[in-house]
Image: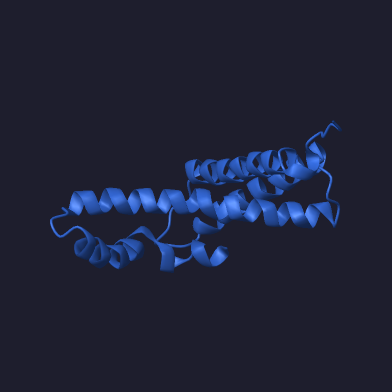
Length: 134
C-alpha cells in the first residue's frame, strides 16, 4: 500500500489520468467538476483501501480460528489504524503528497466499517442462526 503513497497517486497525477475519462463520459464537464470528482474518487479510495485491508489483517490475527472475538477484531482494527498513520507519515516525505490526519481518520473508518460488515456477516450467516425442531 505504500506504493499508493508515492508520487504516482498524487492529486495532480490522478487528476490528469481521470480527466480524459471524465471528458469522454460527460463531454460538458467543467474543470471544477472534474476536481470535485477527483477529490471524491481519492477519498473513496482511502476508505475502500483500508476496508479491504481489514479482513486480511483480521484473517492473520485470527490464525485459523473461525469464532468471533471482539479482542482479535479490535486488535486487527488497531493494526489497520496504525498502518494508516504510518502511511500518512510516509507521505510527509514525498514532495508531491501531503500527510493528513483526516485521511488517516478516513482510512481507519474504512477499517471500522469493514469490522462491522465482517461481524454482521458472521452473526447472520445461516450456520450461526438458532434453529428449532418442529
